[in-house]
Amino acid sequence: RFFPFHFILPFIVLATTMIHILFLHETGSNNPMGLNSNIDKIPFHPYFTFKDIVGFILMMMMLILLVLINPYMLGDPDNFIPANPLVTPIHIQPEWYFLFAYAILRSIPNKLGGVIALIFSIAIIAILPFYNLSKFRGIQFYPINKIMFWMLTTTMILLTWIGARPVENPYILIGQILTIIYF
Image (cartoon, rainbow, N blue to C red; front, side, top):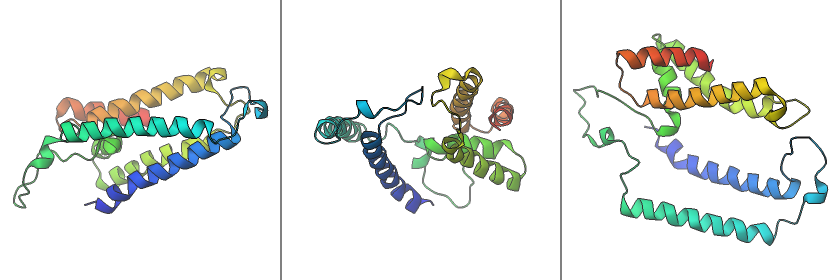
């Protein structure tokens, strides 16, 4: 259904990763005190180029080993059931990186409300990096933000777990509670 999206998303992730690495080595990384870090910068090439190439090669070797030795390890067994247009599948499950949004979609009984909540749940993740306008960069100086960050992280992990579960009684209530906590 979303083949173009699933096809182009890895290339988007790869491009943003390359841009991130380029800017990381050109402008330096964030420091918690917000001090000038020009002294600590070194040229991007050749030092970090070789380090990044070695890391990329090791990552690709592990991925190739995973794909060649056990290609179905990360797949969902329900995806291999032949399609039957006369029977609705018991449990439809998206890819793992959208399971949290799928759990939010399922937890709202109204279809339009569920779709709006799904869009807002993804929009929150997209807006959060641009929301921090504080003087200090790190969260160690903001204990309330630290608590909120770990609550968001835990809630997203639990929503991902709930999104992979079937639509049954205890999971529905847990998903609704986690949706309220997420927003």
